[in-house]
Length: 102
Image (tube, rainbow, N blue to C red; front, top):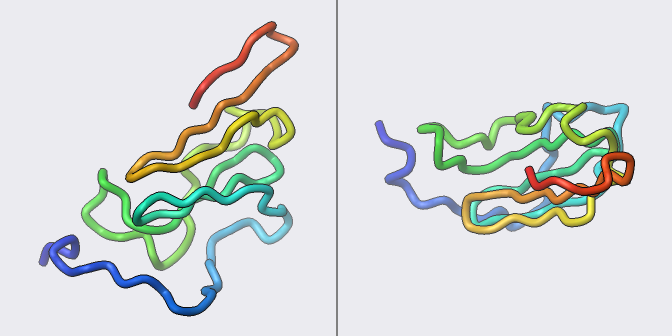
């Protein structure tokens, strides 16, 4: 059964999202049309929702989409946004003399 053929319904109430590390704070949230991405204080990024590269929605629990270490901490993030089906992170790294987009 193709789960994408069913319409995605918005939630009318806040939901608990299992799977997030309980010892880290969420610093920023960015929402696309069918997903939400969360930047945690250690620089890791977690998401929940519908992913265009997977046949099954990720509603059950958050999934780590950018592991810690690609971005050293949330402090170096200049921009954290989401669009239709993408999440964009721009991080500045002054020690390298530039920045990068993930």
